[in-house]
Length: 373
Ligand SMILES: *[C@@H]1O[C@H](CO)[C@@H](O)[C@H](O)[C@H]1NC(C)=O
Ligand SMILES: *[C@@H]1O[C@H](CO)[C@@H](O)[C@H](O)[C@H]1NC(C)=O
Image: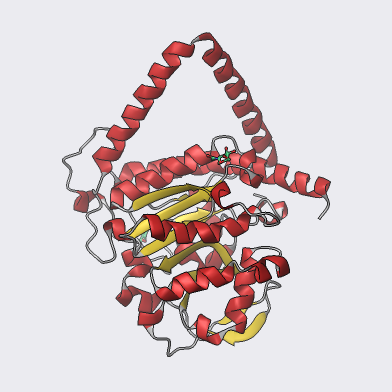
């Protein structure tokens, strides 16, 4: 891909993402307001009363399941003009902030400190309010964000701050462990940064000895249904059994069937990895790993220089490994996309619906027309 072409795509993604993040943050916060007793209000409220019953990601809500109306009613539609305006606005604001900073340097420290304390107070207030009962729960679950703040995500101002707040809130509510790792720690010559997610996952197990599961989330993902715990979504063994799709073909990156399927007689006790496919095959943006010898060996192999040299990115290598290696596949549970990886758009199977745990802006920067609202 030519550099200029790339820059154009990155620009388009940035514009889209700014608009989408702002628009999405509206229903997101409404959503939070309605499920969690935030902001000093009702901290005595019984959470069991205010947290709605877990939404089954496979069951469209009582909104006729019609994607078009669902999207329209919950996510405002951003036009390219809106996106440009929003981008311009946020640029102006940040200029203003810089000026303010220069003028009032000392008070700013005080403001930062107060903000930090507000944030701590908020996190303390929601800590453990979810009162999850199903296993695995608490610090057995680690949500991992790993980035160097560069790459295409760098184009979106404050993306890391927004994503961090969203995920910290979620983890506090469920008492999961939130892990941030600066991925440049794992830089290696001749390897593009996306491969660093693999050693970052290994590292998350190493530095969180209680972790049974590590949930990898790409940077362009927002948790939309913070009341949804991971055990009742997919991690609990009984639920996992229902979620995994059997006999569904694994797709090649061109969307065609590889002819390989996940066997119906999979042994659930062997499932060490949970992942979903999109229209074009396996997507490595949201995936879960269980602590096991298998996982450690698999992660080691996945980032072997042989794969790094041979494939464009970690996702293509993963697809190759899972399609070609039956014994490895036996450790992988494929779930319907919306269970762990709903996209901003894409119809009943792919596109985010109310109640889905998260929205992933995958492909929006790469194929802007795919996400053109
Ligand atoms: C849900 O369905 C019921 C019965 O069809 C209907 O009366 C109600 O308005 C619907 N609620 C929403 C939010 O669509
Ligand atoms: C990660 O570390 C690199 C190198 O030290 C630094 O340039 C970058 O700003 C850091 N990124 C974040 C998000 O902390």
